Length: 82
Image 1 (tube, helix red, strand yellow):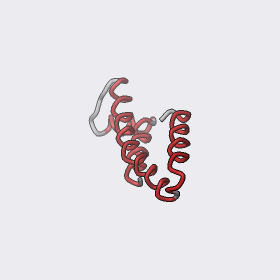
Image 2 (cartoon, rainbow, N blue to C red):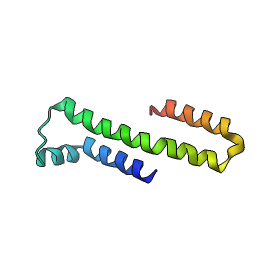
Image 3 (cartoon, rainbow, N blue to C red):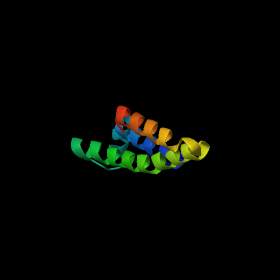
């Protein structure tokens, strides 16, 4: 989960104004579409790493309530736009 959240944090940094300046400073002179696509793709990789691990951690804490946990986590993901 820590690795996934670190990747998400890095992609959030890249989406910010300072992150775009950082990318241009190291030689990536992309257009607007590429400047948004690449960090969002990196964030997706981070979510793919952290979400299953956190789901498994929740289920390990309360195995008798698996259906409730997965239902609530699915609802929060839908509402949160993940």
